[in-house]
Length: 494
Ligand code: NAP
Image (cartoon, rainbow, N blue to C red):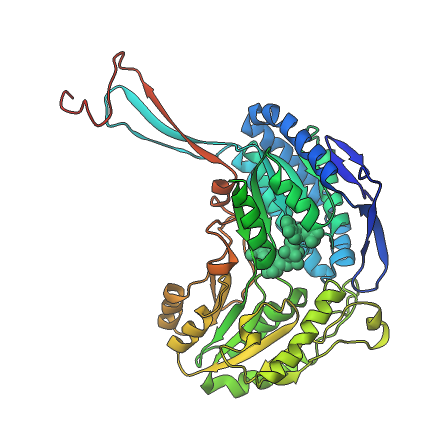
């Protein structure tokens, strides 16, 4: 298992020799010790990426695509091994670990094919004997800063898009999942990526992240993580006039209307609220339910959620794994007091789980809160754990208003049998992603992904939209008239 930085095609320790431990959140087992990098290591990585850039940029994009295609093939071969490491280091159950890796495979193949497309547009010129067209150009060295909750998928979104467009990358993963980052980068090495094109730096976000953003050779910062850290990244990037794309927190909701298939809604809510222990950026942490079906839906949900089995995600018997670390466990638990203070009722769960071996890890009981009001803190703040708040409403209009009324705007869903309700919701919900009769999760890599309000800063990852983050438009005019033609001036002679 690799556990060092990867700089200029070599696995190297931090210059200081410092390390930190990465642990299994289900068992407390130390997985490995990794490099605790500092500014000096960041500088070496950025310099390597800057040196590699001209040659990588000059490589024809289809050739860069062939390298990514090889990465995709290796990911397919290593899927099981990587998925098990996802579960060990991040905690999500194995089926979801496989989903994480599969998303990286999908994205890598999608971006590999982009090497033969990368469409610009060619349009008629307003002058005779002149061509007008636009192409995408690379930007330079990109800093990719990623969270731990999708430790393979999210890095793949950034790294493969950056690389296919001809950029070189310094990748700074979350400190909770550095071994996965090294395993992912090792696949690019094995696929034959030239030295310096992709570099890995592990270490604390504040120190390493700040140094990366402040380095003059880093031209773009692509960040996914909490709104708090994203806010800081945005300010630091602005100080240096850097381009920055931000994907941040969420407070996603599922609306259940009075005409919904309640059993289907229950399945959607359980999967969206408690899958990945509620630690997906798209996790449903609010259930907005029409009063006519609140009682029945709540009973069905309590019956289902109270039976979810906590445990190590490598075991087949486990439905819900641990949360990422002790700080997260403490934070989630603190919201139980907040909920109580705001007049909510804990319908099931509501505390740290310590039965049997669970005390060795960081387990929180899947929790449903009833009687939550739209402005309560548990309805407004991102808890990022297995906790869902049920909010009763009188109408579709009120449901949509409640849905839109948070500082976040990532994902929403509506369960309804009415096409009118569905289309009204699709039109009036103001989050970046809207699902009908499905949970709040399930993004596909070839469509735009991202959020409004405090979730993002106007960019989208995934699909063709991500290309706008990692490239500059270049507009080309070719005049073959043999004389000086002045646009907007020489129009009358034509
Ligand atoms: P986080 O604490 O904000 O960390 C994200 C990344 O930023 C980590 O690599 C972290 O490094 C680094 N970082 C922390 N402080 C930094 C700083 N001052 N400058 C530069 N980098 C810094 O978030 P997380 O706990 O890993 O992830 C959970 C959050 O991510 C949730 O809010 C979730 O909603 C959000 N998320 C959003 C999306 C989306 O697409 N909208 C997707 C997934 C997750 P360290 O780990 O070393 O601190």
